Picture 1 (cartoon, rainbow over the protein chains, first blue to last red):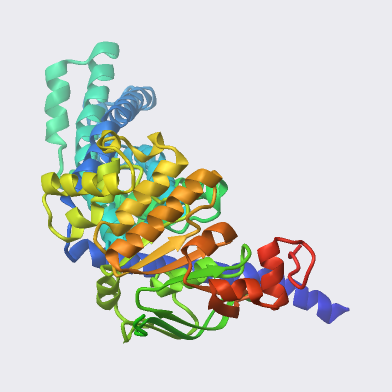
Picture 2: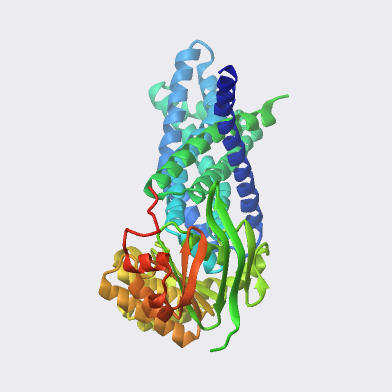
Length: 263
Length: 255
């Protein structure tokens, strides 16, 4: 009776653990294969540019709005929190640091993960369940080269560009609130922004963006590629792609911050 | 008929988890011959065809194509093999991001370095062979009916003049007339190319029409093999039940 209980308990514990390790190995294998095929020709440039357009250009409105309001709200919060100090220069530098180091990369990546990661998983997942991926193979075309590599390259290259634009828009958002709502001197605000401009802040943000772009494309492709079982399977793949890439983005955000800024 | 073996399958086994899907399958496919594998749903027909194409890796056994072993080979050998093969998928499996002619000409453009203009001309020619006009060349697969999608799929499978063509349930989901049109097209294109064909189906009318040889797969084993004529004379109870389409007999539907 008691041993039965223990065995059942261990079984309940062991099965998910084994499944977890199994899918971890599966993912590692997928990542290795994907990276390998990113560097081995043939390269599909047309598909790469299509992805650049999808991930980059069409994400601009979303990223622009997100970072604009993020910059604005930081300016407002800092003013209410730090009023009495030398508000003008403090606000400019707080907006600068928080937008370039954290808000622009993380919020943009999360928005793109929702937009693009989901779309990738749905598209590749549908191709999987309708045998289009098998069809690719029978037409002597490697799905990793044709589907995965262009998306990975586009994610890695485009996200930093998006985030750089987001940096500028976010700082501009802080400027709008600072100058038009709180009545600061525009020239002073701009001067103090540029005084505090640090290379490491911008660069760390762009490195983060590149890593996040890789994570978004990878999770979108992985969950799509492994999806099975019709419409429901594709639905699950979409959810998993967004959830897993969002969590990984937050984890890697911490790790990269630690890498750049901890002494 | 020449008796060269095109595809030689020996002791092929494959299981998913605890379910044994292919159990020690042995099968020879002769050059220029049309083999039809019949069997109920879930008897491993699709898995067998996927193993031959290298889409699934079997647990054990050997598959030789033109005397070359493909199990455990690297992707280069398998890619090389794919250039000899064409496949018509059950649902067509057309790429829905590409137009009809781009689908048909996919292999020509991507792997054989043909320019798009020439490839389009060839694609339209092949589309005409399967009875489709040039007006649909610029449409997208989602704008076509099921029968048209099958024909586009067939055009894509034969455009590179493959030596081996696979048909995965070519008539499933089509009305009887369209099914017969597809059967005729299969026979015609196989004859034109002198190709060896392997078809899996549970449509007996289609099987009788296109088969030289018939094999029946049941519970992962080949339980019967012979010509179409022998099919009607056999006293194998499994085959008899399947041909009659009766729910009574040795084959039990799994619940």
